[in-house]
Image 1 (tube, rainbow, N blue to C red):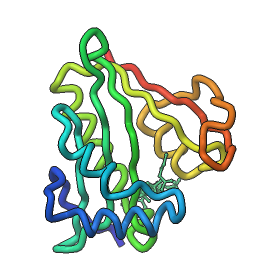
Image 2 (image 1 turned 180 degrees about the horizontal axis):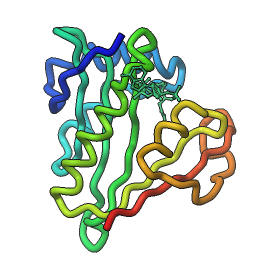
Image 3 (image 1 turned 90 degrees about the vertical axis):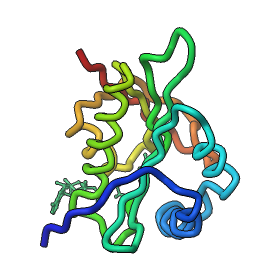
Image 4 (image 1 turned 60 degrees about the horizontal axis):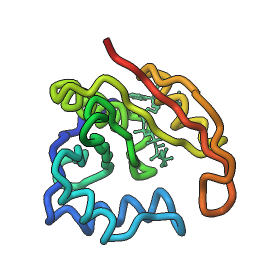
Length: 153
Ligand SMILES: CC(C)(COP(=O)(O)OP(=O)(O)OC[C@H]1O[C@@H](n2cnc3c(N)ncnc32)[C@H](O)[C@@H]1OP(=O)(O)O)[C@@H](O)C(=O)NCCC(=O)NCCS
């Protein structure tokens, strides 16, 4: 079945829901409360949540770089809780994020994805991201990362 989600900006009251989604998705590698609070408080970041009715089922965070690099952004994280996957929630989060970034004049987005995270890589490819290089031992557990990027006209 296809459900539609509502996408909106993160609010402080969403924190517990975001931590629930984060822990369900990343386990021992989950970001902590302080890190989410930092992203939420930073001017220029695009921190969005996806809701089904009143339940939050996903989030995404993108940071716009400052100064001379203000046309470039980094997709820092995206996650959708397991039961809500495969229904387009991450795609809606990315569409909404990229619309906002384009309006701010961003022309390039980059990200790092864990080698072997085929689902995420396939999602990014659908949005035009291409592999740029491997970053050896990028992750805490020694796994390599894949650097991907997209450039808009
Ligand atoms: C990667 C992740 C964010 C994708 O979230 P998602 O909401 O399932 O993504 P989408 O539904 O938008 O797209 C994923 C799949 O659903 C399919 N899909 C999209 N819209 C759909 C719809 N309306 N109905 C059914 N399926 C749909 C897509 O074709 C895609 O298929 P495929 O990947 O099997 O080829 C999610 O799996 C996740 O949270 N993983 C753990 C955290 C993670 O790895 N994050 C990325 C870190 S870099």
